[in-house]
Image (cartoon, rainbow, N blue to C red):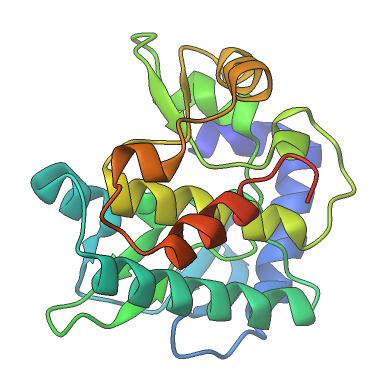
Length: 212
């Protein structure tokens, strides 16, 4: 949103992270090609990808087959690992940022670009409807220093929703969603999808631990 660039701190942070993201080269990352300024306007040039988002797919199918969900999560996790190794963080990944083309190839968009869960909420939920969140608790709480466990959590959120069709974090505000998660936890995947292998249940539960 252009209005965000009126905040000088956000603008500087965005441009610095975008510049760093131009050095990422991974088959599952939608490439950020250039960051610049022309006639007083900043711009970001990205790779063109003809694809549907995971959000669109889940809205249509509700949930995915186990094999497809694990395949997508594996590509996403590998892409984020590539980014983290190069100092680029993405602790808040959403289904809208995971793209799949006609052949099923996975591309993760906006890797490294700054997101603020509380600030973004104001832009995306003007009608105050319930919204799903995919950020680790420490990110929602505004902690600046996080480690790769935040990426593990956000991929766990995506995998959980792909397998059962329900978001891990949801509420009318990020604080409400986080409070529900911390106090009540999540409904175990084995209760919602008992036919999935125990190994899958354990992997997802581990990824979503509050103190892994």
